[in-house]
Image (cartoon, rainbow, N blue to C red; front, side, top):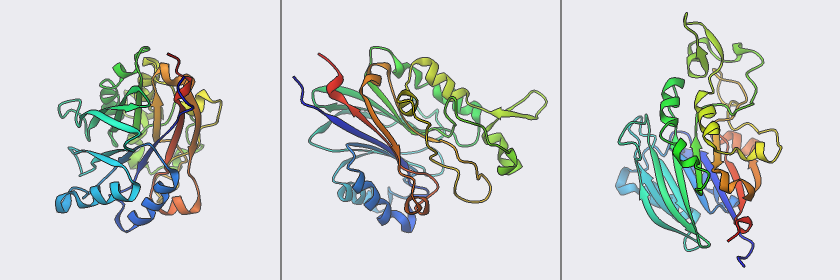
Length: 274
């Protein structure tokens, strides 16, 4: 019988590479004791022979996999805690350059299980582009697969509320978030990418646990002051029974470290029989 096995999986957009906030961000992430972590916006981490990439891995005691972004230097970094977690394969770009940033795929072996980890940062500006990108990810929601989708998906979750007042969002940024109607006016939040992922079979941990999903963004700056979700750990149907806990680290300290909050999902792999 497999021993009780909790796997702690996180996602964190460090905002412009972390800048002078990086050291404090690393202290925060180290305190979470994660087994798998997806970091978005790893800007400049490739400079000086990937010095900050390697420093991050050393600070967290993890191994790092680097996936270069096509746009704005917003690279992705997937970290895993060896030797408990072992990497059996890695593809830094599953789409052949068709994402605004990129989407990577890793095959990680954990306690005798082979997990596919998809890591991405969906298009920040255009909901229609996010929907197209989601089409590259839906196949990993297959009912017989063991897959996780980690990242900044730049969209609200299914069932999440619209802003109480769209005036909270600057008018010139509405097209990032809202449905664009035939006449060019705006409707509600455009969640088509998220609907595509959910309808394909991906499971949203806080919803699965019966929780009201906590915000991960919307508290920073003056143009988009709208509490919302942007950061996710989604799981394929076979992993849904293993969802043990979901949390977002939302404190004055984490709010000061960037415009996104760390998101953590804990899986009890012991619940997978066989």
